[in-house]
Length: 238
Image (cartoon, rainbow, N blue to C red; front, side, top):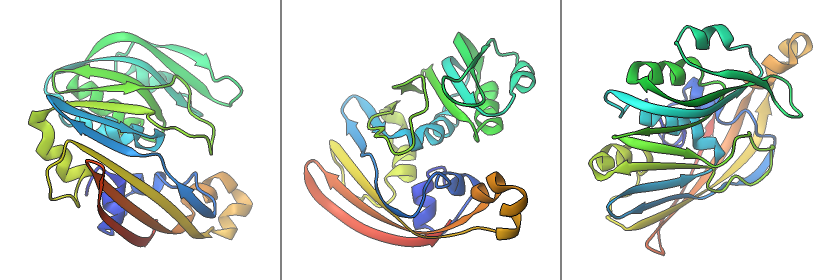
């Protein structure tokens, strides 16, 4: 399975993490933030909030030894014990105007094994973490999760050396067979139907919401160096 949830939709391979990417959506049409890639001496990727955890997963697979981490994790769950088990230094704090907590990390060096465990163990949370390593870097625009419906243009930036171009291309540029200096990818989501387990909703509405199946269509438009390259639409249940 791919890391990129968009690729999984187009390949009809729905993973739990792909499903998770759409649980915030109601019925309707949603024009998403641009996914922009520029190439020169390295690769720079700018994307919206929804790509944050997927970028963390991708980079965690590239890091070979160690990385430097800072930032925070936002959650509605108590993560103190699982974070302590990873020997991470953090400070718990309240989320402003929201339920749950945030766990704040001062800059610290972590092993690649620890980074992978953070991503795997806490993928269901908001990984607002900046990460630096020789194999790549992630920068996060905000220290707070955005409000639903607000624009998150450029929320996460991924920087990679050109040595990772092939892996990145296979994951995120799966339908592009042409070289470029700048690519801009635009997605529009159409949520046509939502199937909710009514029995579960009566006893656990939050779980029912998270497990609801959505019939969606995704329109994908690719521009290379200012020129339209491709347009495609896929329908799926996720």
